[in-house]
Image 1 (cartoon, rainbow, N blue to C red):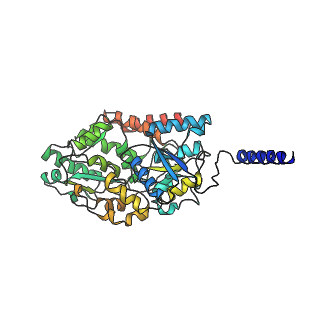
Image 2: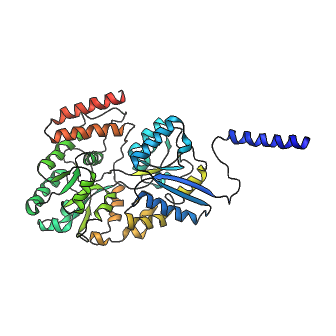
Image 3: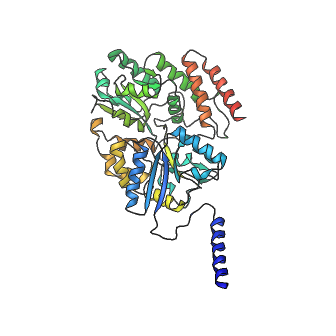
Amino acid sequence: MKKVLSVLCLALLACSLVFAGGAKETVTDPNAPVKLTVWCWDPAFNIYAMEEAAKIYKGVNPNVTVEVVETPWDDLQQKLITALTAGATDSLPDIILMQDGAAEKNITNYPKAFLPVNGKIDVTQFASYKVDFGTVNGKNYTVPFDNGATATFLRRDVIESAGLKVEDFNDITWERFIELGRIVKAKTGLPLCSMPQDSADFIAIMMQSAGTWYFDEKGKTNLANNVALQECMKLYTQMINEGICLQATDWNGYVATIQNLQVAGTINGCWIIGSINGAKGSEGQWAVVNTPRFANVKSVNYSSNGGSSWMVMANSKHPDVAFDFLNKTFAGSTDLYDTILPTSGAIGTWIPAANSPVYSQGMDFFGGQAIYADIIGYAAKIPRVKYGVYNYEARDAVTIALFDIVKGADIKEALKTAQKTVEFQIGE
């Protein structure tokens, strides 16, 4: 009888320890198999990078399997919010990919849903502007991944046929960019660049070069009286009206203008290289220079657009394994970046990767230019801005204002309306 009671006591003790520990699963056997589930999007870019990271980690810890579930960003965000709101965290993965612009809002709204990386990942080894996106109340929650550094991508053959040189576009102002665009348009008939009409990406690129954003340092909406934003609207509208920038109906149409050689170039985050590589018939003719700056607003020739980072979910049964995996791959493996760079153009923000000889190799598609080394150099000079909690609400309002301004609306009035819209949405 005593033996039976002892067994029952041990069983009850074990159960109490399990419940006391919450959802965390303790792996007592170091050789026990562990599966990490990851949500991310884009098979040719993020998913490819994660799968290559999984291969590298197999050499470190062969008992760990990484299952990558393709989840488009909009779906990921919706599933995340639905699960966290309902408290149904068992449906969530161990690791997610988070768009930098949405990081602060998600962390602020669901502070217990994500695990801080402090003490697990050395964030000082990443570009500081990327680390800022995932920092809330002094804690870092993201492992930075792809580089959103912008650049001006030009077709050398078109530029030279207009009597110009690619170098003429380096370290210039937007006003000079427009002047050169007029020349290219007149001599070749081609717009200098393009952008989707349902996107404010160009505006975001211009704004960050001035170190400003849709909100001020106190987090207050800053649209109506934002001098840099007003200048963005004026210059962008001028480019559209003069045919220097071609407006595509949507994102797919924008990519088509590049790949079908309907424009002389584009300005965007460096991740657009993957789309540029699909421009058949222009191999070897592309070149890279930095991004224009303002003439009348303090700014630099460097900016950012897009980018994402990895986050470990608090519901993970294997958080230590998840952090170790990220630490030994995206935060610790030059081999990983050497592998994914040539194929996908996935330029990371892990600083040691920039010392790899792969980054200094000339790219045939870009006429032998070592574009990755150049872009890494741009990234180090990007002004740091805080996207804020309501970044997407402001971005949507600015997109609507931009559409109206291009159609002829007064810039200041359109931005006043945008300001009121955002203030109402966020209860300011």
